[in-house]
Length: 285
Length: 195
Image (cartoon, rainbow over all chains, first blue to last red; front, side, top):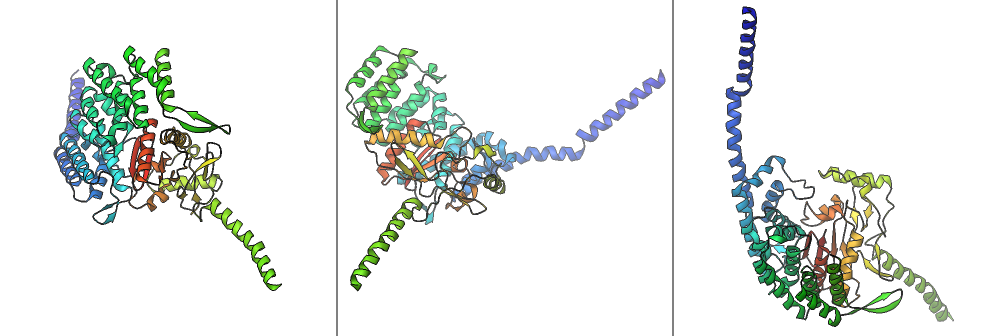
C-alpha cells in the first residue's frame, strides 16, 4: 500500500516536472512574450508598407497579407493573421481612399506614374486592394467601393455590397446620376434586389421603392445599354406596376441590330427581348 | 521583247510573291502570333514546370486545352476575333497562343462570345474587336512590364479586348458587366475582363 502510494507520488512528481519543463520553463516564457510582441511588430511593419510612397511597395505588402481566390506567390502565411487586425484593416480602407483620390485626378488608370511605365501592375494592385477591402463587408467602406465604379467593377464587390444591403443602396442610387457609373451601379443594384440574393429580404419597403423608382427613370435613357440594365433590375420586382413597364418596353423599345443567322440578316431587339425574358421568368416563379 | 519578258516575269512571279505575302501576313499577323503547337504531353509538362518555377502549384494536366482554335476565334458566320499577342512563351521557348486554356470553371471562349454578343447588340456594330491577350503562362506574364503577380491571365480567366478607341473600350466594358465578371476594367488602352 505504502509502495503504491509512493509510486503514485513519484508519478505525480514526474508529471509535474514534465509539465514544468514543457510549459513553465523560462525559454517557453520568453517565446510566449515574443509571440505577444511579434504581432504589433508585424502590424507596424505592414502598416509602414501600406503607407509607403512607392506603389510597388504598397502592392507587395498587400500581396503578402491578403489571399484572394487565387494562387499568390507573394502571400506570406505567417502574416495572415495581420489581416484580422483592426488597425491594419483601417489602414487598408484608408489606402483605398488614397488610391481613389489619386485615380480621380486621371479618371482612368494611368499608364505612367512618376515617369515609369506601370503596365498592368498598378491596376492589378488596385483590383486586389478593392477586393480585399470588399471582403471585410464593412459598412464604412461602402462609399469607397462605390466610388470605384466607372473605373473598376467586380463581382466580389457586388456580392459584398449585396450582403451589406441597406447601407449600400444610397451611394449606388447616387452613382446612377453619373453617366460613366450608371450601368455598373444598376448592375450592383440588381444584385442587391436580386431574386437569388438571400439578403434581399432585409431591405426596407421604402428602399425597394426608391430603387424601383430610380431604375424606372432609366427606361427612358437614350443609351440602350442603360435601358437594358434597367430592364434587368426591374425584372427582380414581381409587382403589377413593374410588369406594366416591362410589357410596354417589350412592345415599344426601338433599339435593334442586324444579326446574320444562317446567312440571313435578321433584326434583333435586345432590350425588348430582355423585357420579354424577364416577364417570362416572373411567370415561371 | 525584252521588256515584255521582264513585265511577264514580274507579273507572274511578283503575283506569287505578293499573294504569299498577303496569305502569310493574314495567317501569321506579321510574325505575331504563330499557330499553336499541338498540346503534347511534353508541352503540358513544360507549362506545368513553368508554374512550379514561379512558386505556383502547377495546374493539373486536364486544365490545359487547345480550345476551339489556335489563334483565330470563330465568331458569327465566319467572322473572327483575332488574337494579337495572346501567345505565351514557356520555358522551352515554345510560343503558345491558346485562347482557351481553361481554368476549372471558366471558359474563355464562351465568355468572349457573351461579351461580344452584348457589345454587338448595344453598339449596333459587327466590327471585329481584336483580343490582345488571353492566357499567359508565368514566363510570358513576367515579360509584361510590371505585370501583376496575381494576374487572372495566368489561370486562363482573363481576356483583353483591344478596342480601337477609349469609348469603344468603355462600351465593351459596359457590355461585359452583364457577364458578371470578377474584374472589369479599362486600362492600358484595352478592356480587361476576368471571370
